Image 1 (cartoon, rainbow, N blue to C red):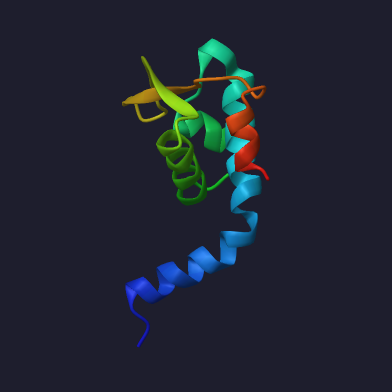
Image 2: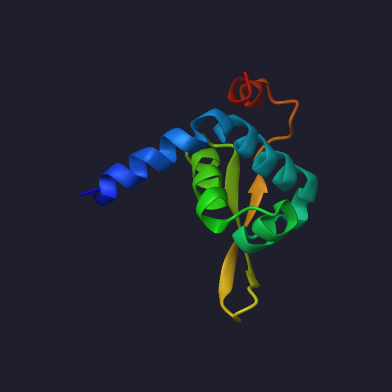
Length: 101
C-alpha cells in the first residue's frame, strides 16, 4: 500500500530537477510585476502553473527572503482577498543569482 508520504516523496523526486527553473519563473514574474505585484492566482494564470506547483515555489522564495507580502490585497476570482506578493530586490541582487546556480 502506498502511503501519503510515499506519494509526496515521489512527487518531490519527479519535480526536483525542474524546481530551480520553476522557482526562477515565479521570481522573474513577480520581479516583472514591479510594485503592482502578483497574487498566487495571478502567478498561476500568467505562468500556466498548477497551484500545487506554484505555491511551494513562491513559499521557498518567501522563506529565502526574495519575495515579500506587499501589505496589499486583491480579490481573487472567488471574491476572496489574496496577498499581493512583490520582490524585495531586483534581479541584480547577487543573492538571487545563488537560487539559479
